[in-house]
Amino acid sequence: MDRIDRAILAALANDGRLSNKELAARVGLAPSSCHERLKRLQDTGAIRGFFADVDPAALGFALEAMIAVRLTKHSRAAYERFRAYVLELPEVVGVFPMSGEADFLVHVLARAPHHLRAIATDGLMVREQVAHIETGLVFEHLRARATY
Image (cartoon, rainbow, N blue to C red; front, top):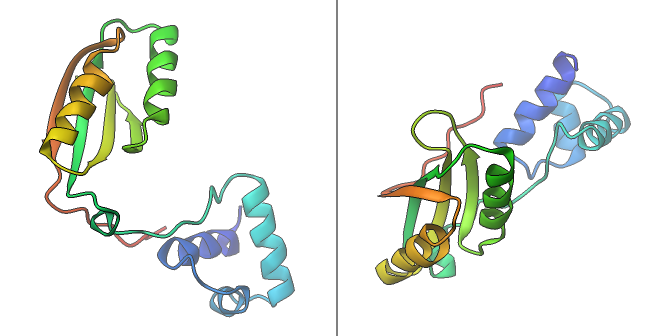
């Protein structure tokens, strides 16, 4: 990866809607060369995908929370079972395996307080892999601009 690849990644991280022509102009390449590099960055996994940053409230989610999860035991099997399970929950928008007190930080969306309680109790605490959870409400979700 060279400086042009890094410039492409930085430009797209800040504005994923750039056209190939606009992107090429920003990084100083011909559009055809830029397209080839972009395809290679996607094929190698440097670009994991493109998405819209949607306001959860627009979809009816009034609450956003981070749930810290500590597993009962630290085995590869317990880790993999919990990881696979939590990624399938429809309310989960992010999963962060961690070091320290929590083994996972799970980012969830909920429609109301009772929905958040159900996610925590019926969705997470009932799992045999889970020893402890702590739920923290997110007051505001801010995204920093990429500075790669």
